[in-house]
Image 1 (cartoon, rainbow, N blue to C red):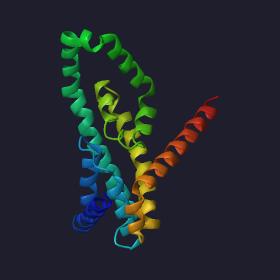
Image 2 (cartoon, one colour; image 1 turned 45 degrees about the vertical axis):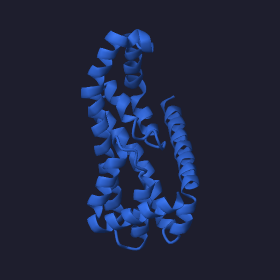
Image 3 (spheres, helix red, strand yellow; image 1 turned 180 degrees about the vertical axis):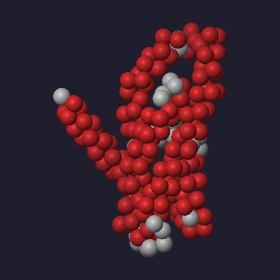
Image 4 (cartoon, rainbow, N blue to C red; image 1 turned 135 degrees about the horizontal axis):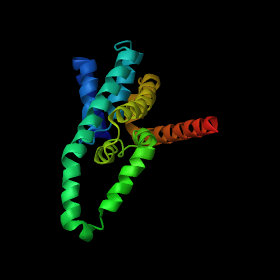
Length: 207
């Protein structure tokens, strides 16, 4: 497993070196769309290259966000144009067998109208959820501008943390390879705690 991670990391480091910011954009587009590709093995090596003075922090950050938003939009539109009609057909024909009804679908729509922004933001911080959080947003026809904004905010927060992880640990790739799962878990916990404090702060301000 560690050997595979090492090989993938080396390949991506070479890809980013060869394609530069375009490589980051393509990698993050893939990561954020229907293919479950871990962003940490893209952005952490990119952070290491920033530390070596080979890439610009600002351009890496922007390329990562643009790729994440592009991949998320692919899922959003797939769910909007293909998934929604398919769900409507399934409800009409087989809804009673799968305990799905238009009432349930309406509840989902209402939920995303009320809480779609924070759900999208937090979803971008959780490995395994990042890729699929765009699907219910598309199903529920979440406002596109809000979807893009909160996808960018959540992705940007996560990307920022990964970049600086690579920046500070970039000279110790063996440590990263051997402890990648622990690093990702800690980063996820940190991200969610930070986001929670932000939400509580905003709620307190509104009172």
